[in-house]
Length: 87
Image (cartoon, rainbow, N blue to C red; front, side, top):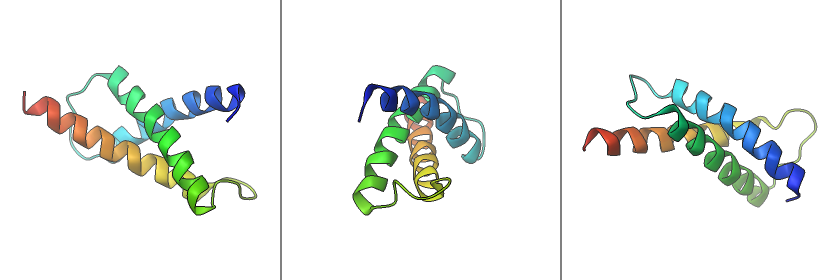
């Protein structure tokens, strides 16, 4: 992954985090910065998973990769919201 790929992953991760939070039903009591960090991590992990299964470079929009990333972000937001609620 090149430096431009890392910057792109960060920008996409910010969007993925917001989408992941929208997918999770109910109110999440986590700060927005944590949502964005979860999105960045989910975008990076989703990209690596997509590369491992061979769907990271398709013609057009990589829908499977995006769905993986949003799903991972939703799981991360759910886990973070649950952990903060138990405090």
